[in-house]
Length: 339
Image (cartoon, rainbow, N blue to C red; front, side, top):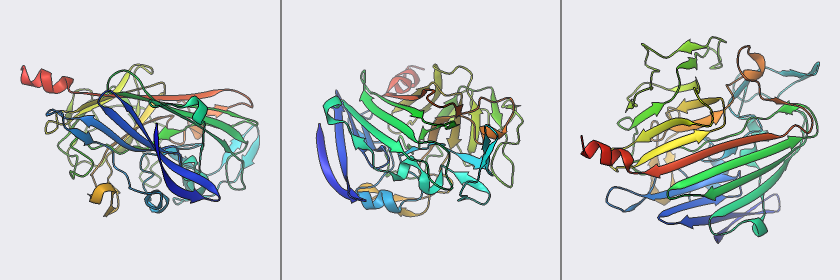
């Protein structure tokens, strides 16, 4: 396993690691347990990096989009404060009256410790003690994260956690994908399918769910059949039909790259990068709005306050497990050429 020294944060060393298997190359930093790059062959068998990111630690510290990071301990939005076991915990807000991705307390802003004895050329293991802080969620949480290259073109992320007090556990990976290449511009012409019959409409004032679970049919939110993303603004939670099975897939005609995602989570946030700021990315790339899309498997936003949806509330010592499996191939390119 190759590694490059990136610097330090609060006296803790930060590295960028490179994993390889067959034609796939994945780079990860222990700052935020962040995916830095995913390089896979395009239809001409040229290696193409399909993940937005930065060249250095400084980029990830200054960036506002959580590019590629493991965000938590509660991803997405919590509206207001949280009451658990009859105790109300005032939370530090960072988006109006919302807490988005746990704000300054996010796992995305912490340095994870690498377990090099358990890691190798195709696998990187890390751990983090996410401590309780004033304004944050209760409990000290012991997290482990494992990136592993599996069968050809497949990378899996598994995050496990256990808390010493009742708390909310709901991480996700916040990778921004552009299957034409991270530096290629807008993703509006790329195609997406989401295996979900229902979504949760957001409130206009808070962007958290209203509590309604609404069918996607006859709406712009229907991605049950593969279709182009287009210019519609998407930042919406989908209730997945079959957790553990295929959750979503995407395809780019220009590159021929097809990506599928499986997860054990009940929901997935589909976000089309509408609020990506104009900025410099890795390898001299220029990023902006709609330059990447996110498949974020998780519990529903603000689920702790909603009825009818699974709640990410875990008792003391109750184990938590998150998994996301991404597979890259050129299956759809072959199918379309045979039509």
